[in-house]
Image (tube, rainbow, N blue to C red; front, side):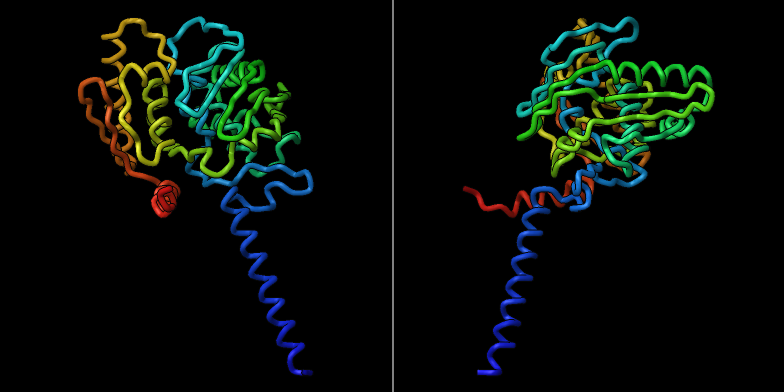
Amino acid sequence: MSMMKPVSGLVAKIEALQEQARLRSAREERDPTPDAVISNNVVKLPLWPEAVRAVPNSFLRSALFGAIRKGRRRYIDGERLAAIDGIEVHYTGQRLDQGDLDVWESLLHAVRDQNLGSQCQVTSYALLKLMGKADTGGNRATLHKRITRLRASAIEIKQGRYVYIGGLVDEAYKDEETQEWVIVLNPRLRALYGADQFTQIDWAVRHALNGQQLAQWLHGFYASHAKPFPVRIETLLKLAGSENENSRSAQQKLRKALNAVAEASTAHGAGFSYTIQGDLVHVEKKTSGVQRRHLAKKASKPIA
């Protein structure tokens, strides 16, 4: 009998460790980011490599950051924007474009290791460098204008099980002499960065498309899909927030933008090709490691 107690205790300990491992695995299945990301009221974004920018899929699969025309921007009040099935986006503020997305991506990239909700510090120089822009007076003024626009906006986004209602930037302060910014981001933005809810955008490809609004939008849209599905030309343009009312001109610009994405992707080792059959755009692309794991995991699930 004296020999049984240690063995029983060891079995119990092994079973307890197995149960802990099972619970940890289930937790990582729901959210693959480390437990330390959300603990003791400390909320952080998942970490991502320097060469990419992490963007919620709802931003990439909707007209929130649209390929809009230059000039005076339309102000909208709670309007529902075009988005793929499963995503709902309502927006209030001046229309946002891909340049605004560059700034928002850079803000999050710069402060991704700091606590959301805290006063995150970053300089104009650092933000402009992240965007591949020179630290000039003109670029500083544009950066200021875009951060102001992001702060003034209000969004309501339903992505998966979560709805986020709030601003893209909660607060922003700047020291005009030192060009130091203090940025506060809403901790609830973290809900948009759950498992399979955001995409790591290849920054080298995106930067190569700088100034090409529609091409940048298309790059983000297709990057967010592990296995792109055929999409009608009219639907793509609507999702991109195109304001070109000339159908023929819009289609010509779409082809030109797709060519630009293919060229930039090939130049940086990220394969991208397309064909247009009838009114459907078919895209083939090189999937990322994360997306390959997602497809493998999806394929391994039993069919109901």
